[in-house]
Each structure stands twice: as C-alpha cells, then as structure tokens.
Length: 204
Image (tube, rainbow, N blue to C red):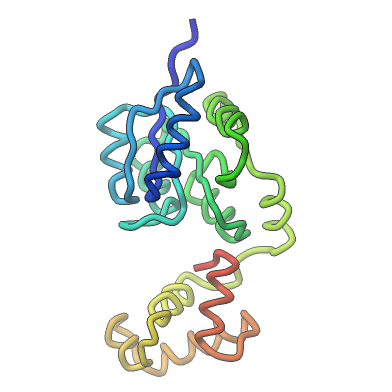
C-alpha cells in the first residue's frame, strides 16, 4: 500500500486555502497535515508536521512564498516545494527555481493537475506550467543586479534619495547611480515606472 503524502498548504486567503485543502483531501494518497496563512510560519510548520510536500502561494504576508521556499530548501532539503501563483509573471518562475522549487503552477489549474504535480515531485520530476515556462523563456533573465533590486524595492514607497541613502547606508550619489541604471535597463521614464515594470515582470 502506498504511504500517504503529507502536504502543507501556505495561502493567506482562507477561502482559497480551504478549497485547495478540500480538493486535495479527496485524493486517497494525499493528506493536508498543516495549513498556514503567512510566509513566515512555513518553516516552523514544515519542521513540526514532517511534511513531504509544501504548497506555497507567492503573495503572502510575513514573507513571500519564494522566500519561504528558500528557507525550507536550506533547512529541509528533502521536502519538495510547489509554488502556486495567481500572477503569470515570468520573473517569478526563475526566482522560484533559484529558491529550490520543484514545481511552479497557476492556482486555477485543475485539481487533478495539482495532485499529479504533488506525486510527480516526490519522484524527482520538475513540474512547470507550460505557458509560464514559455513566457519566462521569451522574457529572458532579470537584468537587474541584487543591489538595483534592493534599491528599487526600497524606493517603491516614494522615499527620497536622501532617505534611501540613510536606510541602506549608502551615499546619495550611489543611490542615484543605481536608480539611474535600473531605470535605463527597464526603459522606464522614472523610478515609479521602473518599480511598476519590475514588479509586473516578477523581477523585484
């Protein structure tokens, strides 16, 4: 008899989380043993419940599903990671794979497809939504450096160069140069547009 696959569900929208749990619960060989609503609760729950597969939504409070995936991958390398997204942003796929994800699927995929993905990753397969994979290949790599991404993220709230410099322990000139380079790379007119473009592509 096949042993039951223990699954953790991390999703901040309770209706979506409960629907996914109910659908997976219909499978004979899958049991949802833990549910969390925050990204910063994932690592502890994985350790506490001894899960085999963690299903992680990208957009969560506390930390993103991609950040949570990286934490779990480092602490529990044997746990398989399935990242779920509502947003078909190609940059997210690359980031998820770099974080150690074994599968990357859209939330509105059929329940049978999600259950199949859970089983496949346990056999060592990698499962990627084909539409997202094609978009990621067409988009290419993230052109922003880690520092440029950090400064753009910090600039998203409208902080001035002086405020950014103080917060990031850099000179104002350095901040200005990084922002200018990022704006040029993204073919944006200003920092606000650069932030929007980078977010839409999943590069922040």
